[in-house]
Figure 1 (cartoon, rainbow, N blue to C red):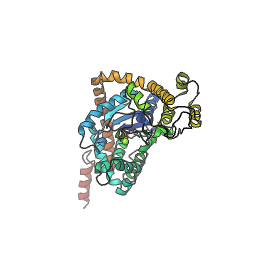
Figure 2 (cartoon, protein in one colour):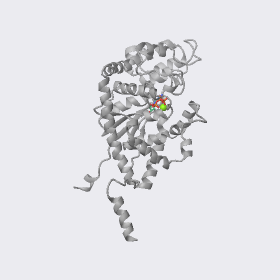
Figure 3 (cartoon, rainbow, N blue to C red):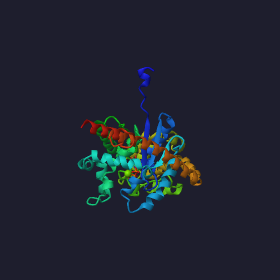
Figure 4 (cartoon, rainbow, N blue to C red):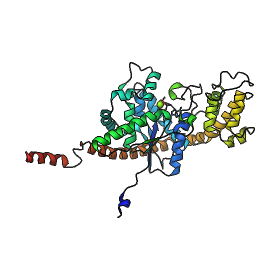
Length: 371
Ligand code: ATP
Ligand code: MG
């Protein structure tokens, strides 16, 4: 065998996930879910792991285990509804993979308290939850447990929204530190952000910087037509755009942010043929003469086109929960196998694999003979 044939091509592996703290929304869709499905269907990846992060959700919901338990199935339904295919992607439940907790424990030693304190996402989430003086230790260190999740699967690519960038950075640091101390073992991942900046952090229907389950400003993938219509029609727009003739601001305006993520030229041809594309529509709104109701009606039509096939798939899986349960069981079994393999490599690198073979005993015997 020639040398170049022996050099193994590095596998392309995806790991990503969501906290089961509520249903998934259109921010998740444009921030991460849509990309996952595209990557899955590109067939360019050797392995795909999609995690329902229940253990992470418990870090700030320790008193509400039933909330997390109920939402695990909701997230699984969201996954299958958007087109994640269990034949290609392993859908699994985090807390059933005990190797993740063990890896987390070893990685905690490689990160300083001040490094975690500097994590901008953790900082803003602590503030949002009024945790200043009472942050649970598990929540504070969740970026480190996320490093365990990512590295356990030797993930190369992590499709996420931009709030997760500091977590990927932290993971890369841990990988480098681990490899430099214990020898080349772990793989450094890279984040895959959506190209459209509005999709990297979709704003809420209230105009707040982030649509978030915790902020109650979401359009959910499982909302029915009436709910979506009501939410769209009550959406925040430009507060200074009082009369149709007033010039309007499209920049901090969620209606235009969502159109920029979802509206295609086909949507314009179908529902609003007086414009060819969003740029033309935006210019009209900015110079005045285009009313909010017309914009919102168009947005509603566009969202309905996106959500209808998702709702149809959901209906099927809601009527086949046994199938969904089996998908999770199988995905979790596969994920467990992979994470255990990594854990064995980590234990070996850290020289704590005492019972993997006879080495530990033989070394001790040799030591004694030499003395
Ligand atoms: P929670 O409030 O419980 O933290 P969340 O709405 O922030 O919930 P997560 O489960 O923390 O959702 O995030 C899952 C994934 O979705 C992450 O990759 C995150 O970056 C992405 N994401 C979440 N909200 C948005 C958003 N508004 N825009 C783009 N991506 C998002
Ligand atoms: Mg979050």
